[in-house]
Length: 399
Image (cartoon, rainbow, N blue to C red):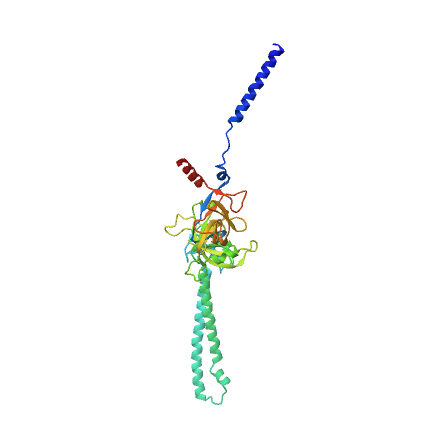
């Protein structure tokens, strides 16, 4: 192929390229101004708020503790001769149920001895009273007008009578103490109890003050909850034992699952701040914590020392707007979509709980609060939602 043909082919390719470029340029679609205004409005999500009466819910953590907690100790010493089968860790006993029996033989003998001594003292008293009657008769025969009161007392044997009476009283006290010691050889449960520990068995030698086991009452448990001090004014505590405070829902998702819970009621403020957290401590009273009552067998059981979550219902707030806390912006402002534009509202917050903020000024019923996080926030910028886009599209299709 000669140079002339090569030049002709190159020129042809260049001309074809020019023609194609020219066609693309003149056939390019042109932008229309009609849709520019709508496209500049930012697409956002909104929620419609409701104004009304609401009860706040405060979330906190707490620790389960027994209301009644005792270490079983004997008041007399001796050998354990009987132990109740229920007196084992995890066992349940009723009030006044016998737990342990200390050998009572020595105490029975002591009681009989003290009774004998008392009887001898009473016999001596009767004999002394007889002698006093004889002394009174003798004094009347010899005439005692010249005697002083002290001399008459000696003649009538009054000191001897007082001494014998004292001996009788001492004997009565000794008998009472012996009976008490004998009764103390039987160790009973002071209340309906759950046995947490057992340290002795049959044959063990015990002395006064020994730790024989630990018992906790089963009627009620405490849940000690730490609460911010500024939340206390929104919680109700009972004025008497018959009243109930604010309702509290006790949960433990780890031990019980997500849906299980127990109910309790606020009972008392401890009246002292926690040393580490500086939070106020309150007592939540939970009845039948071990679910022993009939009909409550399916409820979860509380465990001493367990950490639980507590949701406390506060006093009712009237005529307020409840808004999720995530929708509250900086400087206590809320973004509101009003007539297709952004309105930045300053609001007055009455209270914040664990999930919501409660507002009494700045928002009204059915206001549309913007939930989308915007990169550019300026008062009055255009906003649109999926609903407004759908409505505009339907109108254009009809036209």
